[in-house]
Image (cartoon, rainbow, N blue to C red; front, side):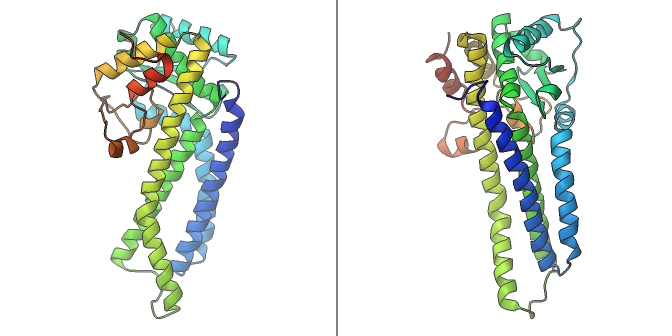
Length: 300
């Protein structure tokens, strides 16, 4: 069974696989662009970019997420209860104390980010601190610390970088098709035509498939963190009750970014999507399903 202690090595392996995929996909795109635009130097530019992309995704993911969320450092004096809860749970989980941030927003929510347990960040909204009691707060913080312990934060960040790059490249290719450029159609026309068709299909389908892959990974990691958090506190009702309150609020965060929506404890848009098609594009599993997985029924 996957839990806080067994999942870390699996996610570390996934991270290296994903970062390798980023490099290979960027190189493949570089070759395609070099061929299509008849400019061999493009493949070297793409190779350098792929290396830089992986370095940036690894070293600066936490800073980027904190900036996008609008979070600010939380002092122990101002948020003493939050600090003690995170500190006690970190000791129990055998994790270093993460940096703690607060987002000034009435919508209850939280997230964890960072490249590893020694460079981790947890952030909560002021709305979360206002509506949860200590037991519920412990459940939420155990969930976020489980993301750190499971080392799935970096996996999600690398997926975001990969999908974002694919989307940008697809857009660039489509624009180049609209405004001209590329290989001479009279030269090697059969091969060129096949490549153009493949490029168009890739440009249309890749962002959609990539987004679905990203969302599927996001939903799976939330279930795992719920289970791992319950294992850490030995009290699943705490997190279940917190999820019930968060789901009942049903209002979006004032400051949002689709790039980091999947990192939050609950959907930051506050929307309720119930149809099968809409569920495919949800960043999080439905709150009711998460509560049922934790305690078997929605808490009163």
